[in-house]
Image 1 (cartoon, rainbow, N blue to C red):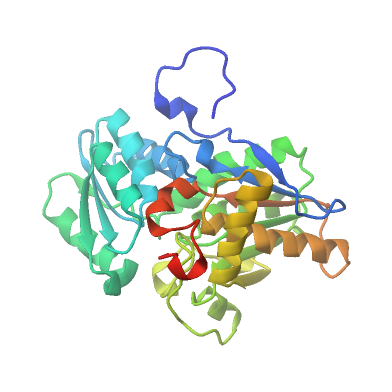
Image 2 (image 1 turned 90 degrees about the vertical axis):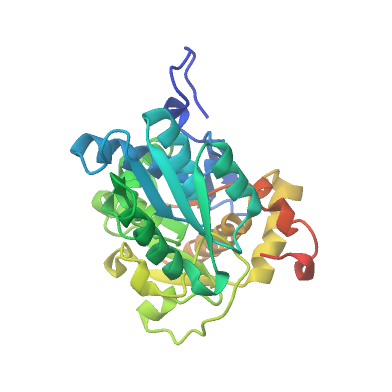
Length: 326
């Protein structure tokens, strides 16, 4: 999305400035607002880090001009990096576990990238290892590694968070964000805490993910259908900073799937399961602030809707829960 009235020179100039939209199912006393990131040109929040990371790495020489980016990704980061790479004269190779969205992989290839699949059972850890092996065999190749690169969180500290605070005149009581690499959450949380240390910060993950173990919760690891958030191995998610998080909330796949349907039919949001999980968690936090169970400096909750449901149509996201492949 862009609010510019003049022609722009590149698609990169359209990244960011996405709308902040009220979630109408939230309480009137403590409204929830969602940053709708499907308005970016690559249709996800990851466009932000694609542009930001590549530009910074080219500036400091980490990525040579005309070099190659090799990145392990579930898909949206690949699309975001591919959008930027094509405009910045950089080649891109993405390593994607087999189970992830076919639509995402097709879009990465359409943007000129090479896609390498790894076995589903190897998880993102396997994709990370394969990416490093591939980069070792290519001259001037770099693995930005969104799971550990501080530029991931910095992109949201510098762009997403200021946009939210500008839209709400700084009156943000709680930040509730889905946690995959943790970059989006950490960048916004750090910005929020610098402005008011009492801002309530919540990480959202699917049931079956194990971020909650960082809080000492004895959660069971299991497969989950919700895509783009969660982890099976917190050791690979190096950006997560427990000191910036007040709570880690788990959302069941079945509940997220139902919220996907509700957001579309009742509020016109064509978003996917990670957005739905964030919506449910944010609404719960808003209700707890309203009821006096959570202290927050302002009566507004902010969350992120990372991408569009169109990325997941082949997986039956709008079919019944049993038919949804996840």
